[in-house]
Image (cartoon, rainbow, N blue to C red):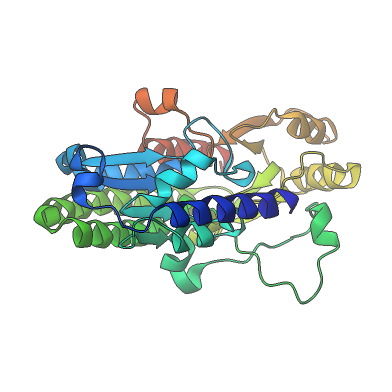
Length: 329
């Protein structure tokens, strides 16, 4: 909570300074190289813009803020980040509690024509509140939350291929409004990309339908709620998806181990960035103690090396499908 307040105060102070120092908006000739400036907080957005823009990306400066493997939940915008956002034409962000600083940055943007894509807002009623299910460790601050606190939505909307389609459609519309001369390029690329998302969605559905099991068990955070909802999968986990907790209680470990024994699950899942220590503890408390540890990529810690190596949103989600197939069979 302190981190979020600190980031909000920093954003407010810097954007207020920007407003005081600049009474004018950025014109095309003020932009670096006269290009359109697009800023993305996380990698899926960045890749989607690249795919939709295609050759038109040559006329854009596309910035990824979290390009060094920083997790969304621990990110605090730097002064340079805030200036970059303030001078952008299109800013794409998640819209959850990790982005509480965004409102003041956008409000005080130097670019008065700034367009935004709030991913949680785009998916509307499909946004899911964070939930605690049996066996999960609540966050320490959650234990003290008052009943009057507003809902906290699960931010990991990009892990649903169906959500990705809606968000890509909105990105296409926003890019078209900013750059009408490349509208046909955006439309054509978007249609092709959405067809690939549809095909992969079908592969996920077919895999789940033909699987022996319908339950996933994570000895870790669980950022895959939207994916689980799409394919009607049951899940158990040590923590909710947005949890900052890293240590599971013995009670949680025993609960998860018991579920493995009860359901005869062949594997325990973790997410990218995990050291696997909780998974090892869970396995050591099962009857057979021979379960395999598998890892699903939540696409939250992509860095420059991954990008230069050719990683894409679709390649990661295809790899995740292979892991899912093994976990359910």
